[in-house]
Length: 525
Image 1 (cartoon, rainbow, N blue to C red):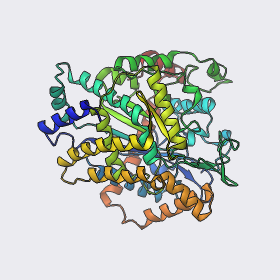
Image 2: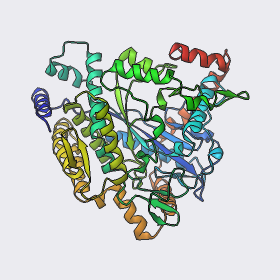
Image 3: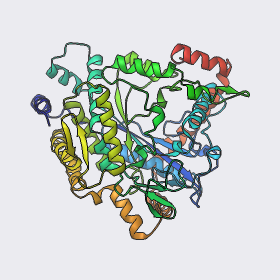
Image 4: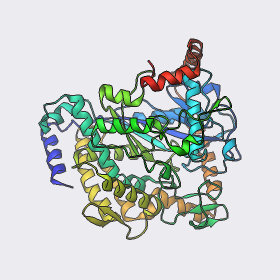
């Protein structure tokens, strides 16, 4: 920890020991629907779950079979966990014999052309969402898009910002100050985010059939399973979201203006490989455009600065309008051990870690800084538990273990301050529980998963399918949802279907006109 961190933490503790408690936390969790035999479900999105275009709780990601569960943001991690659990329980009773695949890396999915794209109805906005996904399939392959994860959304408490701005002596507008500080957090997450892959990565193995897996470069656990002996998160490696196609896209994190500028440029800059695909071929859209990014969401990053957009508003326009409102963390694998895919300790640690990233010194990035961060992420994803593994710092190499313990010493200081303002506590315990994972790599989720595969002599597919069945049983055994909660989900399902129908009925222009206006005006209102 630096003197900058020490000073800022001490100042906050002196000013108001409660100021770090109550940050808003939300979760978006993806899961593939599968048949009882483990194959990808080929059924439409169940109407009982509502409209994926308009539901507040249950939508779809890339595929019709890739569910995404969304919680509101809560001040308590327990409320967030309870809500994501309730959504799972609601879904489990409405998908018949189908199961939810509980791991990040998919298995035994069909050929690319047979992976169904998500459908959002016949409205212009719904068709645009499907076209965007078709474009992703052409650009990166559909198999890669079936990888699932957990997104953790976080914002500091509202009362924090005036206190922190006064401590920092910044006389400027609060929105501008908040955006500047959130970007400092984002830069440090890029620097230190390898720790999240080490602690929570749960995808060290995959099926031999997965597109991109190369048996010549990975050892085999058995006939159907490839793995990295010291891997943590193949999802976040070059086998998953860290792909060469986007390596040439450089988005500055040094200021909000630069971030928006670079993201906008990527959306407007043609890419020869994508021009070869075409846009509208034989009367059908293959992609939204031939630029480096079709829209902002295509930019794969472990962390994104975000603002809630208004209806039809593009993310960059929302950021220009009001600055950064919260941070989206996208590097968490599904926790195979937890039926809801995440647990409360993980959320508490993530909150303390993100506050640490905010308070720690955060120099501006240059190209070499970003490249170094990328190399550290890849090393950790593919070999994070390797004894003696070293990562790169600006001052030279350092063993991952030593660097992790150094950070935990600082993060627990943050946790102490959060606990001081939260009568429920638990943050210090959550951070301290991570020390064993650093000291004993076999106790990490990735280590435990490989031990389970070896101990039970099961391949990845058979093991995860068995877990899927046990998770279904878990939700069936839970106390039934309260009448109020069940009514909330059922009402949302009905409302969302009605809202989708209203959107479809209100369309007065063609899809071509809609897309032209969308890209010309920075969104539609």
